[in-house]
Image (cartoon, rainbow, N blue to C red; front, top):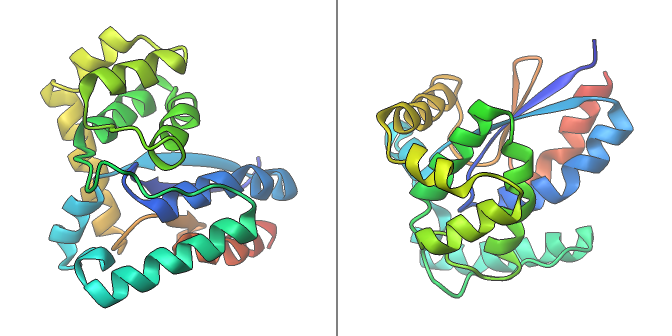
Length: 195
């Protein structure tokens, strides 16, 4: 049985996007499998008493520059979303529904580039429906599901589980129970998968 890495992510998180762009290489080199676990990072922050680095002006400036350095190193495009602070809750709920249906990677293939390359507003349900459809998924089923208590509770449960396992932000990786935080720790994730 191959090793697995659990990855708690959020569609609002640029570091999660950067990690997503690099995970295929990590998985190929290690023969591991990824289990993608959507969560609501702002809810996680509330649960554990953390706050987004963009809420600290000096840190926000540094973080955005640092993320561009990583994007350049990875050879990928990372654009600030022109819609400002996108209310990502509907998209994260869609990711939970996709997780339930075994379709999360299909959704990520379209949602992450839409958010961080094309600059689309994932808070707009028409835009979200278009992204879901472009992934070959049933947009009507998704838009209905994200209003249900079952899907809302699943996102809350994933977020609570991340908090209970000592996560404090996104992306958070678990390999054999060991926590790694941030896309800049992928080298350590890969080493743990190869151990």
